[in-house]
Length: 61
Image (cartoon, rainbow, N blue to C red; front, side, top):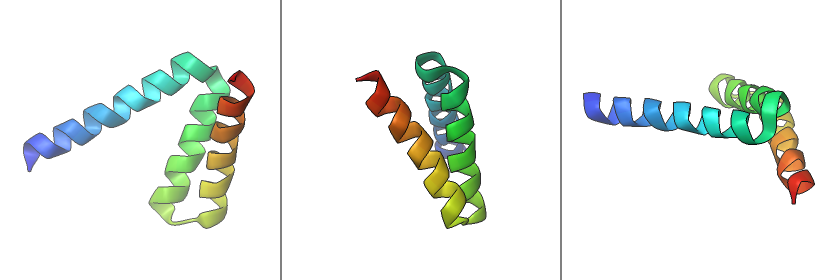
């Protein structure tokens, strides 16, 4: 159980760092909004975070 918790935490940190490096501050804000929406089970907040991240990904193509 401890190992799986450490692995999940490491994956979360790695994802955060990758988004921050690739998309900068807007990517980090979008990821934080998405994570807050998922944690609080707020559909609107999760949709806003997802929209920000999708817009950044599509814009970089």
